[in-house]
Length: 531
Image (cartoon, rainbow, N blue to C red; front, top):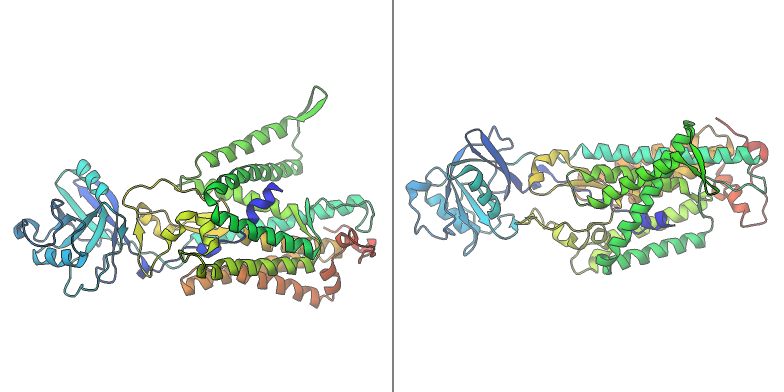
């Protein structure tokens, strides 16, 4: 049950997929150079009144004048000939940004940089009329570092790399999700087929399917299951700082277990020798021991370096892939009725905790986002086109490992400011994946040549594409289950209806017999193994 509870705490967090139009990007790059030495730093600017070139080659080069001894609220102490046609850096404070910009422009400066000891925010004010020079905020610590590296003779260029609305990271997330769902369905099919073959059919009284370790076979169990999820996410919202470490520990255990189960199944399929031996009347397998050590080591490495955003996302996605894959194979839904009830309740759960809860939270951030991103989620919420960048490196905040993360490649240069990710919740893979797994097993029961499996996988793919399209068009995150559930459920029902198998598809076969005195819906002859 450990690996079950981890993912169901927050079923879907795909609504945080960060899409930004190029016009909404308020972060830029300060390229500092002196001779052959160069270094880039993060700056915050306002594109609406200080447009910057999109490439370094197109950016004009200026000499930088150190005026951090003044806040530049007036011209006193600054000689125009010193800053004329140059970039100048002053300190933040004492007066509005617009006033500093007007003073710098009257002195003949070409660029104004404001060194800040506080959080960098998008420069904004009401009175920017007449201001023609670029203005941007930079970290004071970055300026000190630049002085130490380049001395006082610095040249600077300012540019804002283009950030597209459609990022290549979406393709990677799409591939990860569809491959995981397809493999999960295929694995469930293989287990079901092997189980039926060894038992002599689904009507065999002694048969117990090994395609899943946890069965959801009644509506009451599903309702209780979803209710527990609601309670858990609420507890996480109020006691995040305490429970996050428990969830991280559970994920380490669950992901290591899933990695072992998946790799061991592959090795079994390849007929790799187990290297069995006995110690004190206990049978052991050298292959399993080595594999377990490797899986535990991978999980421990992730736990140790989980806050290294630059590269740990690769390992988290690998563990997440096997986690979701093993979950789809482990949990079995007994019939289409249970699938509809579960997916419908989770859709309502998703929409409620994403769209409704912001009206009740103090920060205006949904409970789903708060739990997924941690206590600082409210700080990451943008106000219109505004951004906020910490003035100093911040201690990493713990986050629940329940998402696939891929860096936004179109914003790669802006990772100097903060690493930007496209993310997809594990629930957006697992929840529809359970339906795909049921469809795959139903193919085995009905000898239907994988028609249900392929159609449900195609429906999932189209649902994911619809989710991404909606995000791009609205420029805001969307709960993926809002699209995935209708696509997969309606498609599966349509296939069953067209084939005249809705009654069997709705009520299932063997699993319902476990809880009732009814005869199996299908005869043994129709459950013969098919390839």
